[in-house]
Length: 259
Image 1 (tube, helix red, strand yellow):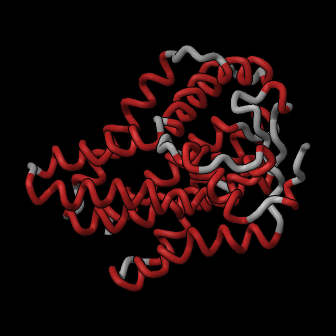
Image 2: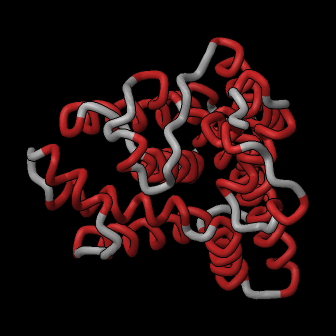
């Protein structure tokens, strides 16, 4: 019997998000109804509390016993293992598609769906990881850990706006994950804002960072990427969401480095 989304429980939806966005074996404990996977973006920032928290703890406590550069590298590796490099894969596909597809919508979508990585993807991932390492290494361990803790869910909250701003670029049969996210309701949007802004508000209060820069500049990055995506393919894909999420998160770290 097929279950409608509205018949599912909130905890099943959160569980589905944890299964979808991490590689931890949550599915062994409980398998939520398939319909719940259409709502995973609504709890995306909440998974960022887990992935960001794990990465932050690895960096901070690792710096007690290891050279700081190694602690930063280890934190990055831990997140890659925790997420299965899900968003990094999206970034590589995004860069390959938009870099090599020109202005041809169908070609861009075909390249992004291809499992092979191209030149744009390789170079882009190298540049991204180097910038991520450099930005975190430029901060003291405590500040870097706190920033990771808030940047991860905030970036996911900001990126989720793509689901509101444009339609899915493919149909469900062409989706790599066989999942199309449902449109985000007002109630879900409020939930997203709480998940992403609550840690950020506490961070700004505690650190005294300029709230205008740390909130609006990453949002501006998302908006310019939205314009690019809309102009090229007139809709979002999972790869686009993963790429935008990482670039928005990176912009938070770069903003903090300038203050």
